[in-house]
Each structure stands twice: as structure tokens, then as C-alpha cells.
Image (cartoon, rainbow over all chains, first blue to last red):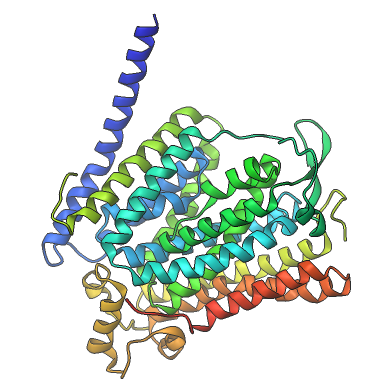
Amino acid sequence: MMDCFIRQQFHGLRYRFLLIVLFFQPFTLVAAEGQAQESPSPWWIWPLILLLVTFLMGIVAVLGGVGGGVLFVPIISGFFPFHLDFVRGTGLLVALSGALAAGPGLLKSNLASLRLAMPVALIASTMAIVGAMVGLALPTHIIQLSLGGTILAIVVIMLSASKSELPHVEQADSLSTALRITGIYHEPSMNRDIPWKIHRTWPGLFSFIIIGFMAGMFGLGAGWANVPVLNLLMGAPLKISVATSKFLLSITDTSAAWIYLNKGAVIPMMVLPSLIGIMLGSFVGVRILKVAKPTFIRWMVIGILFFAGLKAISKGLESYGVTFF
Amino acid sequence: MKNNQQGASEEMILYARVLERGMYAGLILMFVTFFIYLFGIIDPLIPLEHIDSFWNQPVQDYLIQINKEFLGWDEPPLGWSWIKLLGFGDFLNFLPVALLSGITILCYLAIVPGMFQRKDHWMAGIAFAEALILLLAASGLLAVGH
């Protein structure tokens, strides 16, 4: 019986992987054609495909519970003819716009904590500036390789990280007490107000040195890293962690976005179709969420990221004469 | 301060209000400027039919090439030099991007005085430092090349 179960799971995974490969294959072929020849198709084809793909991405991001930014950069840089510099600039603006749109509601509803976000944001946004500067100064193939490695690490985090709705914090540490990082939020499912406090503030803040750097360097939204650190390491309730993470992106990505903007790494014909696609996709995704099977979508997101991570590594290795994908 | 009470604090409400106005203004302006660009109401610097020969280059090469082909400036357009190009449909789109990227700075500057008044010195200091960091990023002083 166990053997049969494992075989079924294996076939299921193989089927999902095949679906993902088939989904991306046309884009890979068209992109390869686009790079090999001088303007083989009218200029508007790519913005149009970008609009369609980001629309699908918006749906998948909502259903998979991830930010659009983390899907955008690896997929668009892997399968479209746009240079990674512009993809990262656009990815940051996509993540920033989503965070700015969500920010006011999250703050007013007291789910995003300004006091928790502010010290974290100071470190993350400073490091995002450094990351953006380093990212724009390094050779493209090094960034591609690092991006691929990071995306595969995100896949591992998504597969292994647990979540804690209400982490047990015995006592707030001295730093969070001094900064008065604490609060109360209303949990409708329990119909009660839940007080919360945090601990391990110093290790948490140090973690954002790396998170901010990577957000700036790769143009990724960093929700995949923010939430585990705020929730599992610092002990903030899951809802507060998710909301504060989303709000935090509006600050972290702002600092990095300025570096990309001042560096000229913004092409409006890439930014607007992406923004419109993600926004419309998110709108549809929220409606589909009511009937979708979250487990399947989660596996699909993991599969897409795994595939996109391998593609990024493959593109990075091309400059060393190695082709495997 | 209402940190230990249910409900958003004064500075959270203020921050949210400034953010909301800036976000809506930025998004609306972004759609308007893109419409102007897409339908050629104002001519772009880079003709739309040639844009696909630019977006596959590293940003440094892209800037050198548009400077060589369309601008003829002494230096490629870096930092805030896009302001001088707002008369072109494509660069007009940098205006809403700058607004969306700048609104967080205004949010922080808005909450700092109230925090100092309430003697919330540590958080006020952090907010002020954040505003300075974001202003430094926005200044264009940190724009570096490959």
C-alpha cells in the first residue's frame, strides 16, 4: 500500500513538472528565436506576451501565497529577451506597487505593525541600496548564477519552512521592550483580542542585513524571507508577520527602486504591461481562491520556481561555455 | 500612543493616509502617462518600433547607445537627468515611477514631528534616519557604473 502511495505521488510530481515544462516551452523557443535574429517579430509582441504571462503570474501568486516579485524576476529573465538589469528594475517596481497598494489597508487595520517594521526597514532598506549597487556593478552571468542559487534556496525554504500562527514568546527581550515593539490585534476566527510581543530582536535585525541585500541585488520581493524571520525567529504572530512583511516591502523596495531609476534601468514598455498584468491577475486570483486547491497551487509555484532557478543557473553558465538546459 | 491598545496608532493612521494619497496619485498618473506614450500623443525619445533592439542590452550599454543615437550629451543620462527628458513620451513615465518611489519618504517625514512631540525619541530617530537613507538613495549620488 505504501509502495502504491509513493508511486502515485511520484507520478503526480512527474505530471506537474511536465505541465510546467510545457507551459514555458513556447516562451523559451520564441525567446531563443528573438535573441538569434534581429527583430524577427513586431516590437509589441513581447509587451503583449509580458502582459499575458504577468496576468497568469498574478493569479498564481495569489493562489500560491507568494509575492509577484519572487516569480517575476526568475521567470521573465529566464524566458524573455529582456536584459536582467531591466527585469530586476521592473521586478522591484512590480513588488513596490503591490506593497504600496496594500500598505494603507494593512496599517489602518492594525495588522501591519509600524513599530515592528521601522527598525527592520532601516536595516533592510540600507542593505537593499548596497545590494542594488552591487547587483548593477557585477557582470550579468554572476548575477544570473547567484539568482538561480537564491531561487533554488527559496524552493528549499518553501518546502521545509513551517509556520506558527501564534508563537509562544515567554518574555520580550530588552531591545524590543526599549523600542516598545508590541501590540494587540483582533483575531476574528477566535473572536478575541490577541496581545503579542517579540524576542530575539538582535538576531532578527541581523537577518535583515542579508534579506535587504538580496532584495536589492535581485529585485525580488522578500516576503519569502521576511515572514519566516518575523514569525519563527522573532515570534510575531503569523498574521502580523505576513502583513508587516508586505508593508516592509514598500520601504525596502523604495530604496532599491531609486538606485535602479537613477541608473536608468527602467523601461516603461516593460513596467506598465507587467503592472497591469499582475494587478488584473491578482484580482482574478482572489476570486479563484475560493474554489482552488491550495496544495496543488503551492506545488505548482514550487515547480515553477525550481524550473526558473535552473534556467537562471543555465543562463549564467552559458558564459563559461556550459549548456545544460 | 496606542501601542498596547487594539487599533492603529496615530502615526500609523497618518502614515497610511499619506501613503494612500501618494499611491493613488502615482498609479493614476502612471496609467495616464503610459496612455500618452503608447498612443504617441507625445513622441518618445526611443521610437517604439526600435525599442526591442534596446531592452536586451545591459543598462550601461543601453544608456551609451541612446545617448549616441538620440541625445548627443557629454554623458549618458544618469541620476535625475531624466527630468530634462520629460518632454518625451517614454521618459514622461519616469514621473509616476518617481512619485511611487518617493511617497514613502513623505510618509516618514510626516510622522517624525509627532513622534518627537510624544517623546518617542528612539522611534523618531529611526524614522528620521530612514528618511535620510531614502533621500540619499533618491538623490542620485549613489548611481554607479559597471
